[in-house]
Structures are given as structure tokens and as C-alpha cells.
Length: 473
Ligand SMILES: Cc1ncc(COP(=O)(O)O)c(C=O)c1O
Image 1 (cartoon, rainbow, N blue to C red):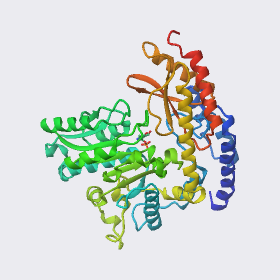
Image 2 (image 1 turned 120 degrees about the horizontal axis):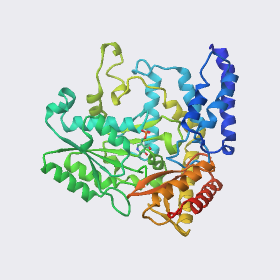
Image 3 (image 1 turned 45 degrees about the vertical axis):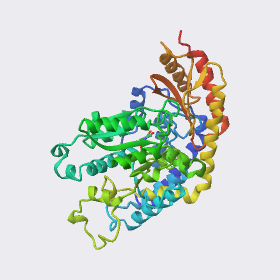
Image 4 (image 1 turned 180 degrees about the vertical axis):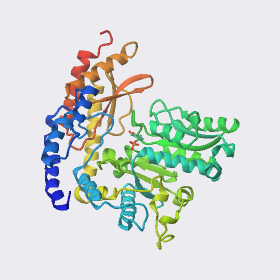
């Protein structure tokens, strides 16, 4: 494809995306298709070269009907994975430039813009100026990088030099029982051992980590010869958006010389709102902080911000300096490859730049406030309805609820009515297990979700639960 062909095809692709977004509210939110239906559909996409119009027609026939429409205004499953069209354009611009982001010398503007945009967002989120950020793909990668740096700190670099086994140390990591599965994976991949991730009891009311229980676990581990290496505190857990109390965690960790990583994957966006910043009180005392603009804030996947308080420590772990990457600017510029795991990086900063310059922070903040108000209003409606219960504090944009009594058959009933909602195509919801019971999470915050959509989601829930949610059936 040459540039002129690209120009003509590109207009058609942009039209296709705009049409999709314009018509999305009329589609069922999720497909009612079996895995083999989807496999058969996508198999039909393969074949000989064709033109763009035929290819887009094929996508309409073989991809769109088999998608969960995450950008649909009545999508309330998992978490909002917003792809603002401004950031989609930034993504396209970045891909179009085709930059080789492997060093400052290979990508000067990419590097400096990434530093500038992450600093801009840091300041707008009220974080202190010591944090230095870069953009990673996902929170999972950020957590892995954090666990590796924590491991090196705990072993004074000996693990990186000789391997953890040679140090003879048994490191421990602590997180609330509601920490995301990516933390488990990070602990495993950093070589620390799944058994060394210690789940800490949560406060029954707030659901945040119980710091007294943390202190007890650390003391018991020290007595048993373990080395407490890291605490992962979550602001906004996946199941219930619980908030771990960062200030006392950080204070405790400082006294014990334990690394603190803060996972604010979803909730980081809320820090853009001054009135919400108390959820992260004390965060400036942590060692690393990750938040995902690709969730609620609305930047297209995959755009994760990773902030470090001491990048020199990170560089000491991550830097390798091969001769084939040497350049005359070495020593006077930042090499982003030394702030994380990958060498080559995409021009992700353009997605953020486009969103921030084309939509602007006022639009983003207004939308976040709208979603918080929607969640509070929905929680009130649910709590006032017979047989319904809100089972976790509605701190952010997610309402966690159950229908009917707990006991035998309760989870099967929940599964049945949630499946009925999803199969109807009227809304899309997901569940999680909380305190041994399956709950439904109504995770609001899609860009186009207005109150009428929330009301329609709630109608679909009530109707399906009344029909399918009985434990006796
Ligand atoms: C609290 C939390 N942390 C981490 C993640 C992992 O995010 P990513 O897909 O960016 O790795 C999620 C995703 O749901 C999350 O909710």
C-alpha cells in the first residue's frame, strides 16, 4: 500500500469507525454466539488480497456481531475500557509515524513527549513532583517491574547478579485478599514464589487492607526467617473498588524498610478530581504507582502510567547498555528502556496528547464526576428495592450488589439472572466472588453512558432477577 492508497483507504476506515460508534447503541451489547460460531466467522476473513471496502464489509459481517461492545452505553461489565476517539486518532498518528522507540537517539521526540505527558498528568493528579513516569502497556507489566525492583532492593542487588536462590533469602510480598490477579502473576514471574504472596485480611466495613493484620503478618514472617520485601496496596480493587489505606501502609513500610507499590489501575483517573484525592492519601510516600488511562479515563488500550519515586534505583536494575544501542547522547538523556521491561516502545504518548488536547481535562473531569454521581444514584435505587442489597461501599463508579438471600442456590441464581441480562443484549454485567458469595458488579463509566442508560441497565437487572433469580428454582 502506498501513501495515496493509504489516504483513500484511511478515509473509509475512519468513516467505518465513526459509523460503528454512531450506531453502537442499537446493537445488542454482547453476542449470543458459541466459540465455534466465532471461529467459523473469523476463519472466513482469511484469503487472497482484496480492497478496503470488501474488507470492511467482511468486518461488519464477521467481527462486529461477535464482539462484546465495550464502548456500548449499556456495557457495565468488568471495568470501563474506554477508547475515546481522540485517543484512537493519536494511536493512528503514532502507528503512522512508525517510530522505533528503543533509545533516546532512535526516538528523541517520543522519549521527551512521554516524559512531558506523564509529568503533566502527574501534576494534574496532585502527585508530588518527585514521581517520574513513563508509559507501559498494562498494569500487569508495571506490577512485574515493581516486584523485580523490590526483589533487588531486598537482596541489595544480589538476586539480579546471582539469582535469588544464591542469596538464600526467602522474600515475602503482602497484599489484600482482593488484590488483582496480576499481582499474583507478578510475584510468580519475579521468581518470588506464589506461596510468598501473603493475603492480608480486609477491614470488614471499608474492605481496605487491615494494617494491624499487615503488621502482625510481617512480624510473624520476620520471626520465621522470611524477608518482607514488598507491599502492594490497591486503590480501587477489581471486585469491589475497595481502597487500601495508603498513609498508614506507607508509614508502616517506611519503618520496616519495605517497598510499596500502589496499584491504582482503575481508580487513578479519580485522582484528577481534587475532591477524590483523599482515596490516595499518603501515596507520595510509596515507591511506585501505576494507573491505567486505558480504563476509566478513556485512552485507548494499552496505555498504563508507571511512576517511580527513585528512577536511579530502577535504572540500576533494568539497565544493560549494549554496544549496539550506544549513542553520543548517552548519559545526558533518559533511556526509557531502563525504566521498565521492554526495549522497543510504541508512541503511546500521542494517544494521551490527542485526548488531552482535543477533548481536554475539563471534559474528562466532567465525565468522571458524572459517573460517580450515576453510581451513587444507582446504589441508592438498589438499596431501596426489596430483596436487593448493596454489599460494598460505592466509592467509585462500581456498584456491587446481590439479589435475594444468601445460602444454598444463591450463586446459581445469580449466575442465571446475570446470564439472562447478558443474553438479552440489553446490558452487559459481570460477577465476582466477594466474601464467599457471587455478587454482580455494575461497573459504570463508558464514555457514552448517560443516566437513561443506567436506568435501562437497572430495569434489565430487576426484570431478570425477578424472573430467574429465585434460589428455589
Ligand atoms: C486493580 C487492577 N489492577 C490491575 C489490573 C490489570 O490491568 P491490565 O490489564 O492493565 O494489566 C486490573 C484490571 O482489571 C485491575 O482492575
